[in-house]
Image (tube, rainbow, N blue to C red; front, side):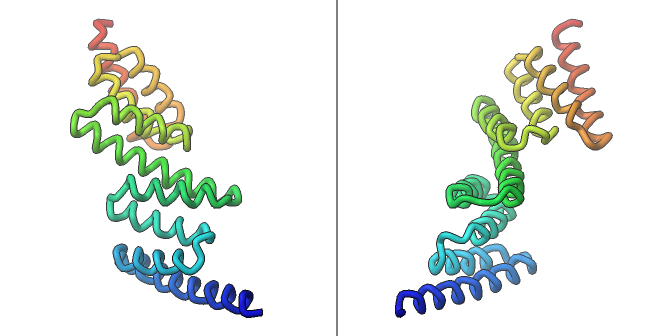
Length: 178
């Protein structure tokens, strides 16, 4: 039927655009890749990988809020567990980057919100807890900062992460006069 032929053609065209986007992404031509992924999505908007690929480009361009929205769209489409973990990790990294931006701008409540959203998606990422601890400390919430840094310490996978958490815990205790 003509409907099946049209669907097959759209799928083929979307795959071609996706392949071109992947090539551009591999060459770090992220803006060009986004254009290709947008074209793939236009022809087949229900393919999760196209949205995921687009989100990775946006993330690499430091357009974190857009990347998160793109990931949310991919999640809404329904995905398998392996994809969900990748998307949650990318989303969490986006929230962490937004949190750092907010923190650097002294928007501590916004930063806390972003860190908490990141923790919700990937609770095992130590950096989120440690960054959240710095933020809480900036709000003079040292006991909460110690709790968050301790959680970060529990999930730390590198000596740098452990050192950062331990140093901040010590600083918080000092600020509390302990």
